[in-house]
View 1 (tube, rainbow, N blue to C red):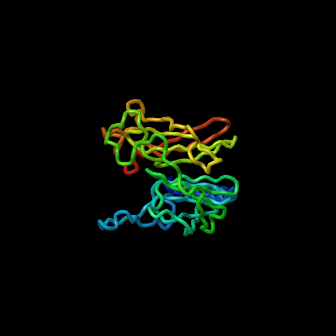
View 2: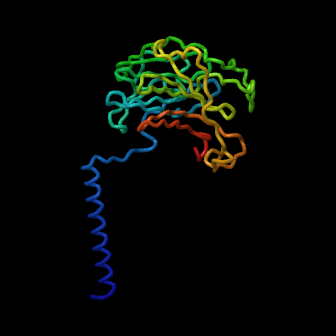
View 3: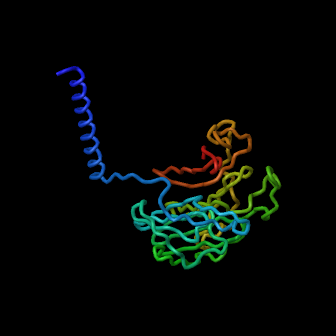
Length: 272
């Protein structure tokens, strides 16, 4: 057999072995339940109506929040007029809610506690909290018809670009909220979306349908430090000199330790 022939046979043998290994790996992955998920997920993204009068048309898919509620997943997305449900995180079905805010839902908070799923929209003024014990059917009711004013917050529209008004003021809100229930039954709210104001936290009162706890003041918890953390710098490739935004607060408790997560610095850039 010539050298060329031996080389061809060797390459064929290696290719056959690689194919067999690939088939075996694929079969093993399937038998072990491992799956590959698409990104972005395949759902019917809704058209944003906010620029309708200006002739602006685009689909919305921002600020997703997914919760596992009694064995099913529920996905809430900015300005979608409803939400999605899934049993496997791959196949999603849109749910038309029985009740929904007229100004829609932006950057929502969602949490599952027992048989109840609660939903809270971003706001710069008092808004309700919705709940459902049958979210798969779209049945939503008011849990708290309207929350009180956020304690110590400045009035909506009184902010000044790039500065606090006054220096110890609290941003109108809560915008981009996250609900958290601790193991001892205490409730907390985290929120914030700004390049001036930080991420805040405040305790809620379950006896008053998650109104702010009497006497509680929003605590400033987290601000960005782009001079120390390169990943917090704004703009394409982290090269913009604009002060970066912090948002997307989310509290997780694991093995007795609390983890406050956040996002920075801009959804429209490749570094988000």
